[in-house]
Length: 222
Image 1 (spheres, rainbow, N blue to C red):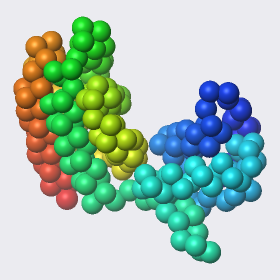
Image 2 (cartoon, rainbow, N blue to C red):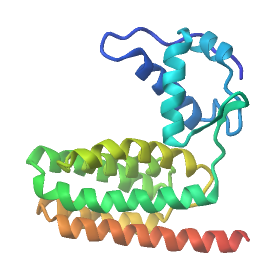
Image 3 (cartoon, rainbow, N blue to C red):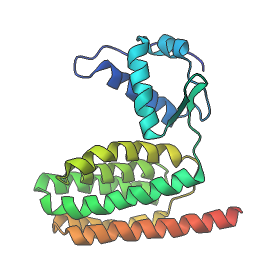
């Protein structure tokens, strides 16, 4: 791994291990740290400019997320995404999204409806442009609904899922831009009407459409 200049600062607002986790997580997701790459303590210390302790704490969290593999006295390395891992994460992501919509929409305040609408606007723009940034929009929409769900267990467990989904989706042709765009007016109406059941049904339908497209794309590639 090329060792960049240290960019980690001791932030008074965050634990150092959390700052390190964010840096390593970003490096894995943007490809700076590649699948299968071994993680060397000395190189990570030089890059991040911190001691081994917060690095090891961050790595332990990344193992929990499924982004790093570790075997004692043998290796610590970035995990390699598999089709099975992708399918599991995809199914869970939309399952979480369905629950989050069902529970969050009835709790929305006017400001929440407006904020969620802004996410939908980004989704429409990226779907129209067939821009892969749509992935991030979907993550933001689900994360927003999760945070507004009022369910602390859902909130806590979603962190690992969302980070794993970002990692394992790399290279998968999962987009159905037309179907996403067509669903947005329904989402906007359900959010405005605080209709959780309608929102949940829309998430379920979108997940089904995207899964069908993915199966078709895989069959064509095969």
